[in-house]
Image 1 (cartoon, rainbow, N blue to C red):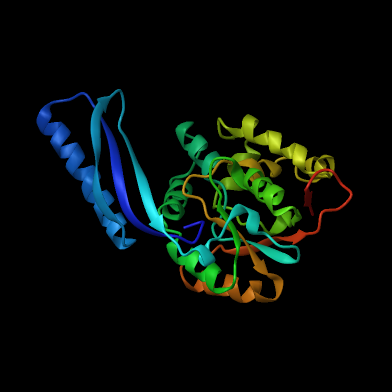
Image 2: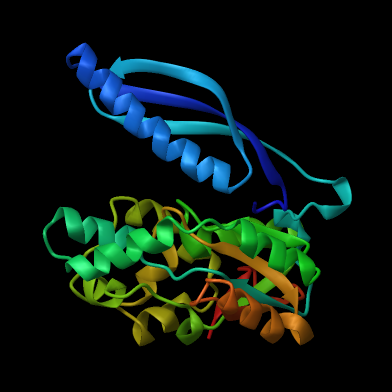
Length: 263
């Protein structure tokens, strides 16, 4: 989706714990039933796969998609003057870490799961209809890490509007309580790409980690022409992406060696 492709087929890899044969069969039936339901909704056929036994339950997919060459959205497609649009709120990393520590409220976790389960296919279609050429999905490296990945091949700099970044309910609470993902320290290295990070640290000492919070089922980060961005966000919100927002802008490379400014 992040590249503008349509999923066509998928292969499943399922790992089930050691147990009685009838329980293995029941577990696989439940896994595949859920998988087929979601894949079918996206127009993607489950065409095969492999199962094996292991120490814990796991399920993954290798998905093949199709996209016309002219319709590809890439990490290197950002252009100076564009608005940065994010389609989903941040915070799954800190919320899931808090849940494992018994520090998250049930409604926070349910809200995060709801956003994680929301497909991004429609969002990608909307972004493409507004002429988006630069796009990526925000996943394990967090918003800042993935934005840096886009600025380099696009040969641009970017400004993030800190107060405009949408958060999942409860994410600010768990960050304020000092709960971060196990990937936080690794992702925080991306702060070296922010040329005013010292100021950000002073102004947002408890909130800035949201920028490097690793996301599961995160949204799309895309560049949209500034004059079209408001209409694009409105259409995203009308189609189920209620937290979609303009979170920054793309700029020409400046004198600063670091590509990101946070305001």
